[in-house]
Image (tube, rainbow over all chains, first blue to last red; front, side, top):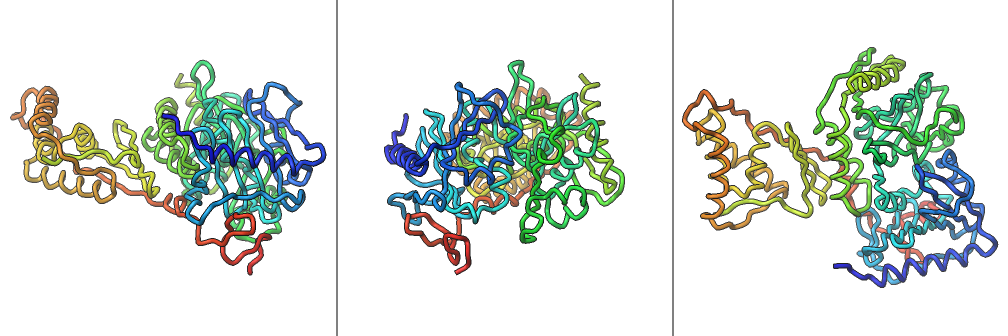
Amino acid sequence: MEIINNNAQSFFLKAYDTFLKASKKKPIEIFIKVGNYSIKLVFANKTLIPYFLPAIKHLECQPEVNLKLTIYLWDTPSTDVPMSAGKLGNNDFLRHGLIEGYNSSDISTTYNMDSGILSSYNYKSKEGIYWIRNPKILPSYEKAAPFRNIFYWWGQSYGLQFSHAAVVGTKDGGVVLVGKGGSGKSTSALLSLDHPDMVYLSDDYLFIGTRKDGTPCAYSIYNSAKLHTDHAQSFPNLLKHSVNKDEEIKEKRVFFVYGFHKEKVQKSIDLKAIVLPKITGISQTTYSKTTSSHAFRALVPSSIFQLPEADRIRTFQIFGKLVRTLPAYDLYAGTRFSGIPDTLVKILKECMNDK
Amino acid sequence: MQVFTINEPIVVYELFEDEVVIINFDNGNYFSLRKSGIDIWKMILKGESVKEISENLERMYASDLLTLTEEVSDIVGLLEKENLIRRIDKSSGEKRRNGQEDFIKSSDDTTDINKKQVFEKPLFEKFTEMEDLLLVDPIHEVDENGWPYINGTDNDGNNQ
């Protein structure tokens, strides 16, 4: 039974009208491509561009007409156009920022109180609304991975599963690095930048999909990477590229890899293995095969629980299929860092030899 | 007779050969169930009671019914405590017939202890690190346009 929620539709239309008011002069359009899907970002003015473009710069492309997604972006301070929340009470703001009454089978809406970001997506028209209360208070993680919720909702229509993982690889294919925060995903991914044969797709979030022949693949969304401040000190060559090295120490250091290693950033890759890094205290890096169930446990909870409550069952099933398709490995990451990318290359070669 | 069912829709699971991974969407906790716990979970899915599960395990494993009943009761208690399963009433006649048939088929000689597997206690692990992701936002004020912000900060993020 389809639940028709006029409130959700009305709110979305109102938000779009507000965007139109905000973009009094001609709005600025930027086009990107995720996989083969063209996306248009329509900025009310140039204010928000430097906040969000760096993370997706590597996906920028020429204007296209066959669009699969359009996102309208504005902020209040630079446009002087406020966005009304409508008649909402305290109890209408739910987990993950979902707004009671503004979600239906056709519309998904969240408001992130921490960052002051409204995300709303219309599944029928394939349009998104992204309003920022005040860009000056945006945390670094929002600039590193903008439009997450809109991409998650949109991706479901195209078989693209928004996932919490890092992906690096070689010409043979890619590995998905999975695990909870602090397990060594980001470190392992960033170390690939120093390896001559390796490419980089993501540090934190990406789309996992399948090619027409059923091969699992990954699509880059953000070329950003983040490291804990303390840990980033171990990578002085990297630290100098951090875009927030002077910020408060509690924030992670953010890097836009496309800004200093353009040639390493890859937009898509066939996936060959799932790798679960673990930090050891010993110098040598080793690896061993592990089970699908172990990979599932490492991948699924952190992906599912960071997403607003859309189709979690479907997400669950997609990941279940992925871990049964790809071999999984434990990576015992050593303190001699060069061993980590060397071992990832070994794992990929082993996967190719096993075919 | 009381049997159990998965506490849908807040609980989902994925069944692997060596493990059942169970997720509680309500609180962010996820669980791993291994060893004989996998068989117990499968029997719960079939709607078996504690008694039926224990008797079926006795056919499969080289262990006595009392020990098995204790282990099954313990694990069912844990699953219930974590809101992963809930009790339901089922007609005893129908369930007994359906459940028993499957397990009698899979074990031709139920008295030959040499053909039974070594019983390994169910292994049940709980992981709670996702709980924080599901916390509702802290108490907040609302600005002039109706948007909440965290108490103690203004629209520019400055502490008040």
